Length: 312
Image (tube, rainbow, N blue to C red; front, side, top):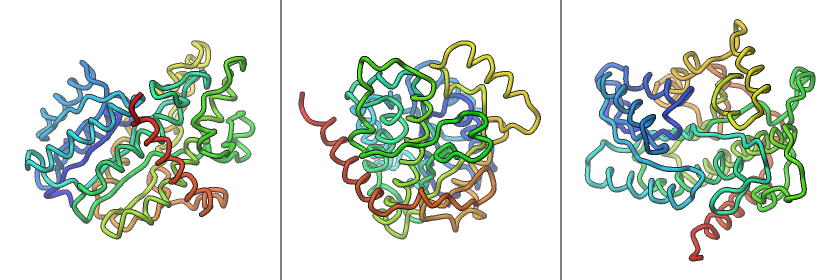
């Protein structure tokens, strides 16, 4: 796969995404993919693209605000053009890395959807849907998951909010204006979006065909990253301190693991939404397998994306 392929990655400018990009760019020439970097246009995107080029990679920057579905549709069109003209090699991988945890679930994306759900799920569903016909088999789609979708003993002790499933149309609706923002509501929205990603991965595999293998990567707990940049200053300070605890995951450690899931023959067998925690395949909890929810999510996602693309 790696000898003749292109990998597209979202959220390439910071933390996990940046280290995954640099790990892919630093591979030997015969194993190094062309890279399509999809992220906000600006100096950060230019900087990581230049770093990747300095390591020998062929790189194309695609400016895109993932909270804006019109931007995502345009990014998919740009990628299709690059592939169709032979400017880059065949599309063999897509890493849906970008993510956000909004501190205020009343906030909406430009399309009117709750921000966490819009960026973590809807944007990537839009992007992947726009590129499904452009993959060359064998290809891989790697989605970014999180164990926060369920609460074990340690997460309960740390008051980590678990998912609270509802119809996806409801999940996409911002919280009522009179509801005060809270870290609990923010955490529930994030964990629920990550449960949606597991459901989406299972349904995507059923619909993508045998030539595209779908998996979900959990990078491990990485306190102090930009994911919670909307959180209060005190919470961000605590998170940064926890990030220095020995054994806690870091972008520098987990980025190359993410790159390996997308590229290495070792992981070529992963499909059906297989869940990998850092470098360990892991069975998900029973709640993460639900055919009815998975079908409904697929249908509702199509409805929400179509609604966002309708003339206003």
